[in-house]
Structure formats: structure tokens, C-alpha cells
Image (cartoon, rainbow, N blue to C red; front, side):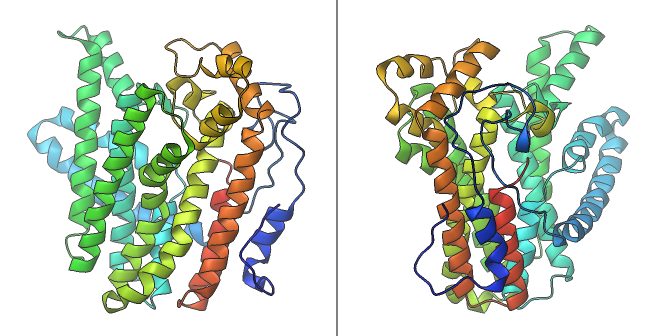
Length: 402
């Protein structure tokens, strides 16, 4: 059940969140009946998580940001082509990723952070900041795919895989894999630079937040890598990775950046209030991602089945399973992160996660964190319109499909 700090009643704006949290769910202790398809991309009868609608404002925000991204990338592709026509292709990989879909959550939270502080989100700096967040995210994904040796993203071949195959087919000298990795890393670096360029006109308060965001993102990635090789699956460490690798830079920092772009003089008042919403919701966002990484259907998520289990990711979900596992169950969980993990192995691990109650516990935690975020934003000194949109986004990100 969804719980929240004491209050008399939910506002009309947050009623949808309450309904999502109170929706009945079958117990996730039932047997794993299938490894494909199902509600929300999970195997049938595994869990029944009621989805929330996509906020209508997301499409409008995405349209503005995508137009700005297309403009920036067209200029950059043309510039690189003047050096060598073949250079347009690596630059085009950024467009293939950032214009090939995505939830645009970071631009949305930046947009509503700006509006929350009283700014007009139609101001050009908002689209620039939103595009910068998408390019920063692309930088992280290009590098993450190389580090994880991921073959696909969103159902398409990853950049390093694509260029390694091109090297192999052309019969070029050297090692195909090293070539592919090198191209992907450099493409990611370019996305990082372009993100910075888009914020060239931002105020110093915004740059202070942007700098913190970039450092926090790297801290989270290093924690993730170290945690994977150490097989360190304690709950505290897993949740710290969860917060720094994704949660803060997906929700809290975009809200902060938007707010100080609009009203830098109100930073002391606004930033703590937005953090009280953004931090718990960021944790819930990443925990939902962890569930999808362990149980998601590749046809829905665009990622390999049990991807996080194959990579040995030290997630809050795995931490809960390890804490509650019997000796026999612990032996099965020890399979996680092995170089070769069969589909049968993945199914066995999934079953242990269910049987230990780890999945049910994480779902309850997601509900609690979402309710905490909604309660916080209802108290925040922000505009009413932004408050309503942030409540709707809370429901969506904690119950999203992909």
C-alpha cells in the first residue's frame, strides 16, 4: 500500500497518484510462468503494476527539445563533414540516439523547475537546457554501453557494436572491437562538449549546479563499476549508487537547474523544497528501472532479458534478495554477473528474487518514495501549474512502461 507522511487529505492534483498507489496488485510470490510478454513488459502473472498515463505536457516539451537538438546536430554534422565526409557518420550517431526516442524526462523536469520558480518555459534558454540534458544523457549512454559491452539499446545496435562490425566487414587493420569502442567513446565526448555549449549563456548559479551534476554522474558510474566487481550488494551501497548514477541527475538536478535559470535569487528557498521532491522520486525512478532491468520484456524495454542480472549490477533489488535469501537461494543468486548466464539461469534468479519477497518489498518502497515526493511538492513554494505537472510526473516515472 502507498503510505505518506501525515496529512488531512490528498489534493485534487495528487489524486491520480493516490489511485495508482492504492491499486490492487497480486502478490509477486506466484511462480514465474513465462519469460516473455506480459503486463508492463513483465512476464504474465509475475507482478501487476498499474501504469500511470503519460502527462500530456511531455509531448510538447519533447517537440521543442527535439527541434533544438536537430538544429544543433545538423550544424555540427556539416562542420565535421568539411574535414572529411566520412566524419558525418560518427556525429550522426548522436542524432540516432537522441532523436530516436526517449522519455525526455530530464528536459521535462528542467522545464517545470523553470515554471515552478515563476519563469516562462517558452523562453529559449529552457529548450537549450533541455537539449543539454539530453546530450549529457547521451554521453553517459555511449560510455555506459562500452563499459557494459552492451550489444543493443532501445532495440538497435549500440554505436561501438555498429562500428566494430563495420571495421570487420571492411577488413581494416587492427582490432575491430577497439575501433568500435574508440569511436563510441569519442562520440560520447562530443555529446558532452555540445551539452556544455548549449549552456554557454546560463548564469553562474546554473553552472554551479551543472558542474555538480557532472561530478555526481561520474561518482555514480564509478560506484557502479566497483560495486559490480566486488559483488558488494549491501542495501545501503546499492541505494547510494541508485541515487548518484541516475536519480539525482534525472530529477533533482534538472529541477534545480530550471529553477535557478528562472530565479537565481530564490535558490536558497527553492532548491531544498525541490530536493525534498526530487530525491525520493529519483530513487523511485531508478528502482523502477532496476525492476525492468531484471524482469523486463526485451520487446518492450529494448534491452536484453535480465540485462542487470547478466551484468551483476549491484541494485537495490538484488540487495534485498541477498539479505533475505536462504543458503540454497544464495547459491542461485551467486550466478548473477557470471560471464555466461543462460536464459534458464536468469529465470532461476528471477524466481529467487520473487520468493525472497525482494520484488514485493521494492515495489512497496517505490510506492512510499513516490508518496513522499508528492507530499513534499504539495508543500513547496512554487506555482500551482508546475505543482500539478510535477504530481502527474511523479505518478508516471514510478509506473512507467520503459
